[in-house]
Image (tube, rainbow, N blue to C red; front, top):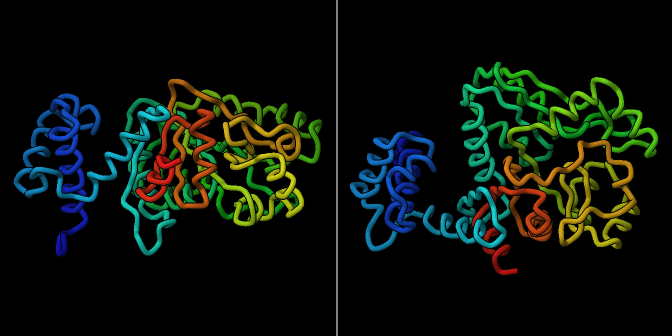
Length: 318
């Protein structure tokens, strides 16, 4: 695809998706239109483009084909409402650039809705990179809500909280959580959550139409530890208790059940909800994240996933 501009590449990507859905997965053009969020006429043109650009032969001659097969297998195994797998860069398999672009596209799809939506966000590097990929938009009909605070115990802020950055990007009403990541006691957490502004934000988060979260691993490279929210001793205690991942600072084990006690007694974030109908989309990739993603999938903490090819292969091999 050398020499093609970004619009041409994006168009070919869409044609590849349509071609795969039609020729490999056996979808009708009406089904393709619904899945890609386009008109039936557009779906028909995309299928035709896949043929004229010689993407469709005996197999789909495009790297997205393998990714779509992996996504389908992940959807069937866990099961998931949605799954997007992007190609991996062999030289940097943990790169979040591809998943950030895919996540931004999914966010944009929701933001384009004329119906008002509540869109909730966690925090982290992958989410911030996704927000940076969004085009400027004007979405005053929506509300964007943070699921957690971003303050350290000394009052300093994390660089990876995304809610204000998101609101600036899309001109939506925004509701940052004015709390530390961890309270000093259960009683303090209760008092913080009972403050009227915080209570209102928690209610909005509970009613979110779609939620986007990062998935954090445990150990020396854990975001909670690297960013200074937990000490080395606290991380060691969590690991000894069977912790393998965290979402919005809630720490869980291999089956997705929350670890009892320890830092979970002090998390000031909105409670994790295991929704059967509303999308809760995890955005994560890399070898270090595999166990954490698996726990989130097994425990139904997320019902959607955006990841890369290498990570998808590792997940399916477990």
